[in-house]
Image 1 (cartoon, one colour):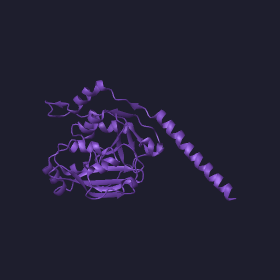
Image 2 (tube, helix red, strand yellow):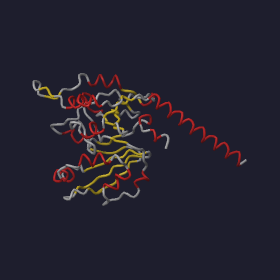
Image 3 (cartoon, rainbow, N blue to C red):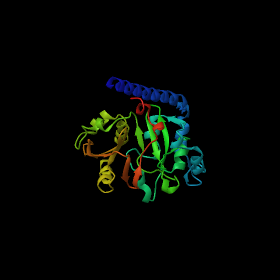
Length: 283
């Protein structure tokens, strides 16, 4: 009887694994990526800094809301997005301040100036990869030519006019256990050894002014931060930059339900399974 039960358990596991593999193969075939073309990088740069001296303002996409609504696909439909691919440096570093890795974009909600207008982002980085999650949250999805996936969450309280919360950058899907040895006081290099996307954060902070970083940390409640979207939750790690420019961990915060409180209140960072890297399904 026990042998029979064990046989059916193994058979069930084989069927589930086979189903996941078939789904993954189908997704690879369906997920149409707009490949990065080095010849258009100059055009992207021009769009990012496209300035009309007569109007005295950055040129934005006309009817950004209509464009978003036309492109937006609901998570419940399990539809595959057309994911555009951009050069990593152009997308993540030299992006004309359209967004900042490690910064809660809701920080700017009560500020007089901000650059993360979605109409401007769509002008610099055209995309039709827009997802509405089952929690009614929405995000833009991009892919770097080095493989990482970038998720920019939209501000649902402002008709998607600006971004909300932290940008999410995912390379490989990890778990909380992978960070079990990360504690207060360790170098950011140890975090980078676990999650390679931290290198992009470090590149951004390489020429940061230590005094300004300290101001944001102590006066604004916005320390240097890395966000890690895991298989089993969301991890937020904060840091301090010393006068020597050494960066060390000051806090490790885990959110098993992907809901994290920030400058804009509680926000659900749930990402649709169909939009996550393939190793989420097939380890």
